[in-house]
Image (spheres, one colour):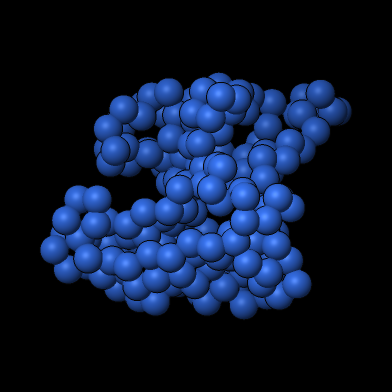
Length: 175
């Protein structure tokens, strides 16, 4: 623990593994899993000089849809979760086309696919480090407040409005 009771930052991913990182840890999906028509593409790429997960696609609100997502199961084995007590939140390095983006967390309390804790993710054309404190995450379809003792998955999501999504993620930390 550092002064003030918080842990030193913990790297969750920096994408140095290149294309293997996508196959090993990240999954990419859209609202098509529930009948929507959004189109998603997720690749490992070099974006503005950095190795990154590059999420692109078209978010459509047709047929009750409205999202594309790249998600990473946390812990070893994957999905067992990480204890994020002692951290103040999540830090990400992102760039892309501004739009309606979010970070979604799933914890031991989220059982149904539509349950998560979400926070808005500001995206700009230049690489920017964004810190989202735990207080920024609000429960969706849950009455339980966020318990960070076991975060099992984190996702970068384009959602809630029809648009062409283009976002890259080059670093992911607990901070």
